[in-house]
Structures are given as C-alpha cells and as structure tokens.
Image 1: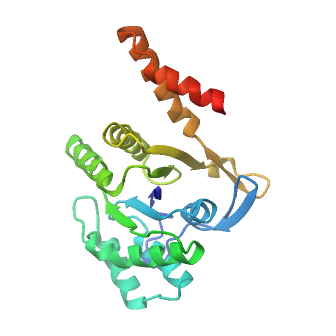
Image 2: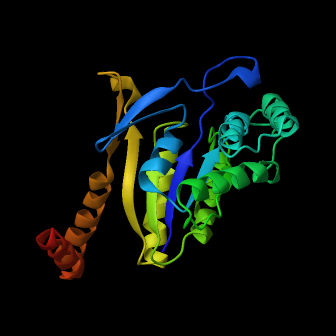
Length: 247
C-alpha cells in the first residue's frame, strides 16, 4: 500500500524574469501543526509522510523553481540544469512547448530523495506530468487522457491524497473523474484527503488547509441511493451505513 499525493503546480507570479518567479512563503495550518513554506506540497508531504507524488503542470508552470526548492533541501542543486529548465519554460507557450517530461526526470529524483529524507520507508516513484491549458475541446480530451494514464501509477490498496490549491480550476474536475474511474477498476483504492489551502482567507498569520474529502463521499451516497431506488440494490448504502456505525 502506498500513499500518493497528486499536486497541481501553478505559474506563481507574473515576473517576466523566469528565474525570479516564486510563491511567497506562507504559514499554513493543518491539524494542530503550523508549517511555513513556499510550496503547499512541502507542507502536505511533511504532514502526510507520503510515498510518492504526482505533479501536474503546464509547460509554463514553475518547474525550475520546484527543482531548486527540493534540490537545495537534499544538497544536490545543479545550477546548469536549473537554468536550462528555466530557459525552456520561459520560451514555452501552450501552442509551442519546449519542455518535455524527460526534461523533468531530475525533479522527480530530488523529490524522491526528499521523501526518503523525511520518511525512510517511502517507496519513491514520483512523476511529473505536463498537460495542456485545456482551452478547447481537443486540449480538454488530451488532458483527460493524461489523467486517465495516471491510473497506471495507482495500485490496489493505495491511498490517494489530492491538493487543489493551485493551477487551473479545471484540474479538480479531471482529478474527480480519474478517481471515480480508478475505483471501478481497482476497488481497494480510496481518497483519503482532498486538500485546499485557503490563501484568500489568510488570517491570524496563517492559512488553513482544509480537507474537503467529505464532499467526495457524498457522491457515494448519491450512487447508493440511485442503485437502491432504481434497482433495489442496497449493497452500497449498507456499506456506507456500516462505515458510519463503526465511526
């Protein structure tokens, strides 16, 4: 069983100098812990002790900044690689992508090393995925195929954690569809956390990270009611009630 975090990577600020883009440091509160970091992914990694992460971003996402962040944490920063990635990201647009997933392999490596640094039992196997902007039907379908392809990274018994704080608002929809589909193929896979960092509600010197997974659970109740009302099948409703009684 692996704990897998799926994280969308945004573009940060709009600084024309690609090497100066960044997220500002934010103090996040999750559970009873307060952790300050530029990347909410680091807060979730520290809190959840995940085995691997799947990072989703466009050709313009802050890949160079993400690399620098984790490479410095494991003392493996390669300035030449960082500048090369930044140059490719800087030239890229939705229609003309100069960066490939092969270019991002070193990012996967430093993230895996960081995961093992804070959790020696982490399995590793992190992945970086490049998606389109989704500005037309073809790009939407292409992104759908990419998210469906992520199912290959998920095995029976795995626990899935999703973050929806950054990047395009369409990404949570793709995540939802992927998770719905994977649970039909691999029934022993469950969403364990659906996290959102409430940056717009920043107060008391911290931003709260909320777990929205109870909203996803409502979809199970809807399906259970549909099965019972239309087919007299009470299996899913019984399972859900049994789970509630145990709680």
